[in-house]
Image (cartoon, rainbow, N blue to C red; front, side, top):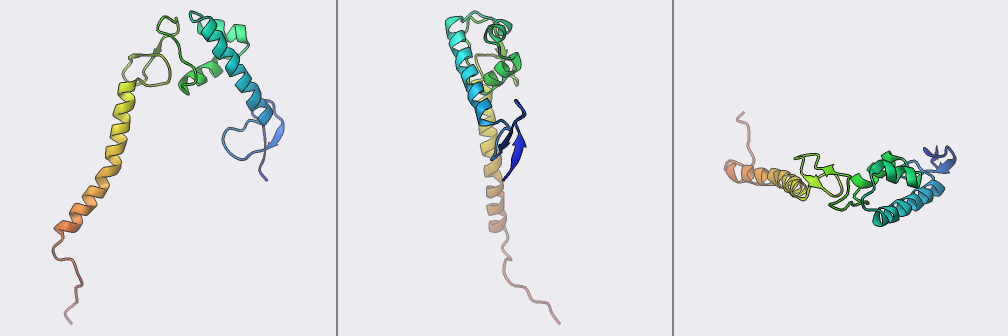
Length: 135
């Protein structure tokens, strides 16, 4: 049994994996998220500070939800997000669609290259086989 203290309330709980937050705090965070989400839908021109103050949620928590792509803002919102890679304007997350696609393609090609190189080395080695020492 892996007992830990909740990072939010300090209560001890059985930690299985993931963030060190107890079940009650997870439920409270999810309720706060639903409240913030509804507030943004009702007030699409609200600023980040106004959203945080009116819902009694930290702006850091709201920014985390934005990075996780759980919250999305309209194009007319005063909250302007920029892609961390190219600086393009985005509505949610950390990267624009173009940069996400580019990163995914780079990752896919980096994993496929070593397999091709190893296959080419095997084909080029014509003297493969057993060798004996002359004694």
